[in-house]
Length: 353
Image 1 (cartoon, helix red, strand yellow):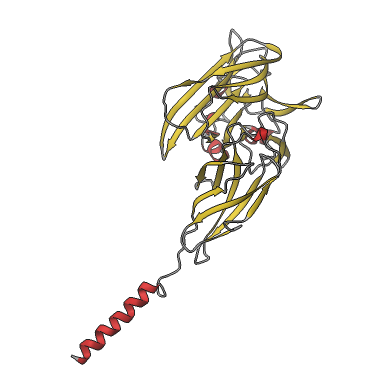
Image 2 (cartoon, one colour; image 1 turned 135 degrees about the vertical axis):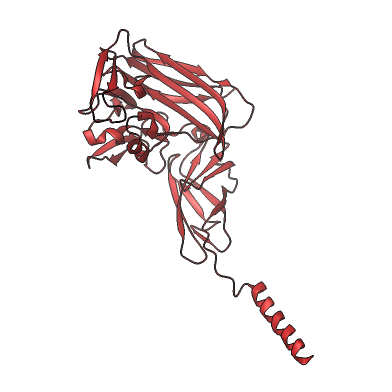
């Protein structure tokens, strides 16, 4: 009986040790569970979107940034996986100098073996740098710098195909200065290997790996969309357009081999530019289209002209993502267009009823 009692006591001691956690290994998780800001007169936090795949977090304000005076200082409220630490810590004040500013946060697991760096941005219901006044430098595949729309590479929402054509020192999307104003110019251009490449401008990211994996499909590199919660009724902007002299269709001599040469056929008619606006709800791999508008035209417009496109809604659900894309050659993804076609865009604004 004495041995039984001693055994039960030992079992109780070890059980208590397990319950206390002294023998439980430290966690290897470094996860961001929630992130927001304390309500502030200058920033009323709405929804937050945590993109774990791209290590990004976007906190949306219900206040339009046009009515704010920067810099603004906000206090964070952060939740991470058990035992993990985050720097800067929850409760820390952070200052944003402009709507395109960003902050870096590093989460480290309890065991210290894993860490993740997140990029934090703040957003409202408009598109950042929609007037294209800000541009940053990126290094191309030719080891030379080129310009991209946005104030910083880490926080820009705009993407182009410039990286893909940088190997040829050719850039289809560039800034255009007009006095103190900066616009974006998107052109259909030739390279030494390709009869034409339609310049691109869209909200999202350019995926160089996707371009390399599927080089005969120019649209494969476009990862369209950013987190977004507004429900605009329309989008408006200023534009001008000049179609190239000769509409052509380039066809690969060896399908699947981008560098096997092209057969080029002259076509009747004019090139046309294209614009597409989409609101989506994304849940995992499931994508529901909430609203959309597509527009294309072959009419040359010499002077900057206002254009308003009304969105057509198909669902009353709340969107989670948004994108807008522009191309000077609507069918450029199939190597159809006209070299020299030029679309100029400025001052994009989302309209709300």
